[in-house]
Length: 244
Image 1 (tube, rainbow, N blue to C red):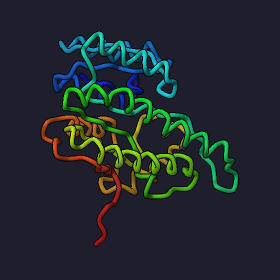
Image 2: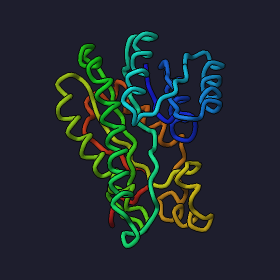
Image 3: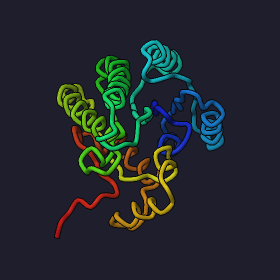
């Protein structure tokens, strides 16, 4: 069973569809997008796979606990967690940045990852199996004007996941990150002009933006048996990682 947070659209929806196609039963988590989440569930059901939408704010402990309890009752536990839900952040320069903006993003980013991981790991340990997959961004390593809050928060998430991976490896539980460059059709990209988006695309090796399906297929690999010895890694997408 796979739980994908923030799965009503974009990367999350693409991941839900991909994992359902791979044979997973899927929980489509959302915070306030019930119609879109139910549409994803309907698409999955039409293909013959099983899915359910569950409303929960991943930064609220009681919501997370209730969601996990419902999953346990329905399907006996979570085998794959895809931590995809994006918490809000300010696009601003350091000169205009307030501590409330930076500290708020750090808190919400790590709180969501911490709560979800704490909730599913005991069951994974008891079953001796688990896949933890977290959405990061290349901005945690490659700075870009205006993205200091997101880049800093995701850098903290990256290190959190490395420690989780180290501790849980003896239990056959893997923890990895997927770190795409700019992904088309997300809430983040909606804040940029068309000209800026063309610049982002031109800066990638393939001269196009990352697509949600690209990310979903990488997540599906990390969720599968072939990635059983892959843990503590960050898989970049769309960045120039080699220098000639």
